[in-house]
Length: 253
Image (cartoon, rainbow, N blue to C red; front, side):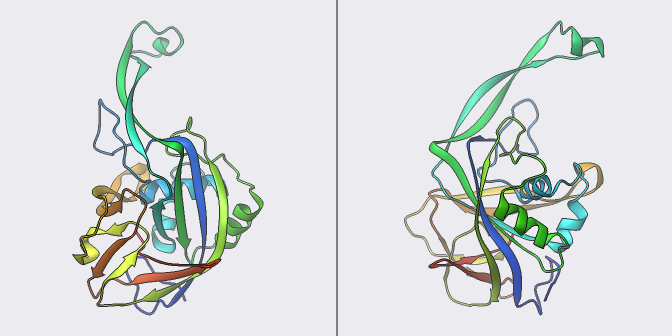
């Protein structure tokens, strides 16, 4: 039974898929940065929409309204990461001729996410009302992507690994639950303080036409790839997912 992302009532089980995306480097540009390109720690929901759109071959920025109402998305870190800053040399273009014969350049600090091995994220996608869910699952299984997947920018190409086709089961609890994914901050009533590295980042939740910002949300992220043990507010469910010998509890973004 399908439902919209803002209304989970009556939505018990949702068909979906779990896959990993990884690469040597990643960059998810913070929307408020200008002269310096800072990066979020994990891909925002809008970036994951772009990854799905690349797999399916959607035209750039044509899919936000469709995916906002029909897809549930979440993410967790698979690998420990750190950030480093590189300086990129951009063309300073004041006229059309500067693109072919540049006279001046400008240097921009650019924050890059990297890891001792690979930067890796686990992506959870569900949606009975998403018309291309079957196509998405089949393309992930067969590794046939219309456009090459990337980790935030065109020059950070990524590899995708299909994990499992799944059913997400809606659950409600008034006790502490270990959540594997990022957690929407406004959904949290209490957090069990354990040995962990907890981050809070405000990221874009939805874009409108012409990539206009519609909604920002704050999320808790466990930077060491562990669980976040939280008690959720009663109006916010969590979702149980089983694959292989693994059972996880997640919260959709």
